[in-house]
Length: 78
Image 1 (cartoon, helix red, strand yellow):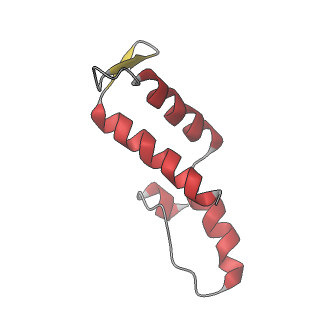
Image 2: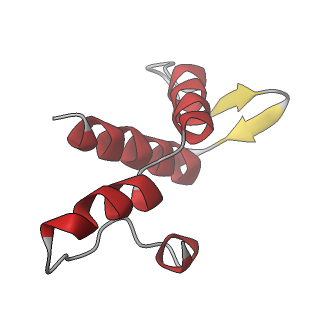
């Protein structure tokens, strides 16, 4: 849990028994995935990289973070 709080999204394991807990603790939560999808949807205007979600401006840094969350989720499901 501490590694996730520090921003880590991956970790090495020395024993196969560690894999499940690493995946559980470092994978995005369902609420993070849903919010990331909402951000991507809110910024799909091809003429702008800015969007609005729940009355808040969504810019390129948040869009990049959302795409990283969705990429991590996709990689975990492979």
